[in-house]
Amino acid sequence: MAFDGWTFLLQAANFAVLVWLLHRFLYRPVLAIIAARKAEIDRQYEQSVTAKSEAQGQLASAAAERAGIAAERDAVLARAAAQAEEAGVALRGEAARSAAGLLEEAHRKIAAERAEALTETHRVAVELAGDMARRLLAEIPATLRTEGWLEKVEQYLAALPGRERQGLALQLAGGAPVRVVSASPLPESARELWRERLGRALRCDLTVELTADPGLIAGVQVNFPAAVLELSWRSQLAALRSQDAPAGERAHADAR
Amino acid sequence: MIPSPLASSVVFRIGPIPIARPVVTTWGIMVLMALGSRLATRRLRVHPDLPQTALEALILAVCGQIEEVMRRDCGPFLPLLGTLFLYLCAANLSGVVPGVRAPTAGLETPAALATIVFLAVHYFGVRSRGVLGYLASFAQPKLIMLPLNIVSAVTRTFSLMVRLFGNIMSGEFLIALVVALAGLIVPIPLMALEILVAIVQAYIFTVLAAVFIGAAVGGE
Image 1 (cartoon, one colour):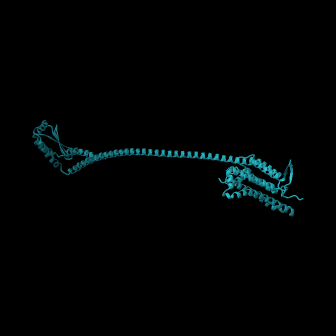
Image 2: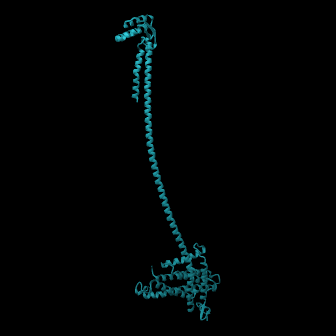
Image 3: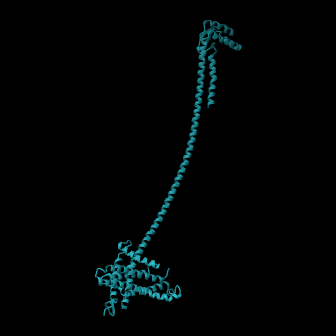
């Protein structure tokens, strides 16, 4: 078996040259491009990490802004709620004051109307009473109706001081008549009766004129030339009305 | 006198130096590989096309295999071990080409490669551990192992050479015998088997070289 030393040495040298050639033209370029790609990938990764961190920062800032917006919204809502509460309280107070004013006005109106109604009712009642009395008195003969009043006139004149009674007599001294007004017409016979009894009460001679006024309801009105003596239900009802008027005003004051 | 079939015929001479056929074949392989590498790496881009992707995958596969065996970065060892694998693949497969005899079918080429591996083991071992540290590694794990380790360093190199030479030479002889006895078509399955054997032997040679260098370098 032959072994060629030259071939051995040449093959060893050939392999060494081939190692250099492949290192020069194959391994180094390929490894370099792989390293470049890895560097590119690393660079892109760094960029992506940077972009990610920036995005996270922007996200955090956006979240902070959102939280700020939410806080501002809450503050605005709280402010609006406080203002609404304040306005509500003011409106409620205004409404309460208005309602109190309206209630007071209504009470005042009601009291006024009640007082007016009371006065009107009283007036109507007085008129009704007068009307009823007039109708009932119409059933009684006129002489009987006036006889009681004649006695009252006599008593009144008798109760007068003497000087006043003399004054009345003096008014009749010139022949002036005493005009007697009754609620219903009196018969002619009643004239003599009135002349006699008034003359006796005044202690003088006199003349009497008889006239009728249904407005008196009952009673008489004795008209002297300078004085009038009225003793009738009309005057008494008028006195009652004047007494009741303050009563109506008192009712109005109580209602308030 | 019948010439030895194992002897390499001299093609031409350069002065006193005889240039045998394995050398010429190797030169041809070198030219093809160098030109192919130059062409393949002429326009490399960061965004690769399909051929560049295949080339990078091949280099990364070799690199990954080296790292897997040696448990180290493949950078310092890639030129030697990668070239060893690529050249052995090309040299072993060249025997399939009609009229070409594989350089590794002769004794000189496997001997040259085994010798280079032998020297590379010591080179990387000394570079990694220092002279004394590397020499001390022969006495590990016990001093009594020193002669055995020294003999082992020689015999494993010899086994590398003989394994490669025997497999490739026997394959070629087998194919030649079948061609001589049975004609042209019959050896085709044997040639396919020879392709497989060629690649497997290249892989075995390279992996064993990586194991030897890795053992000399030591674990990180």
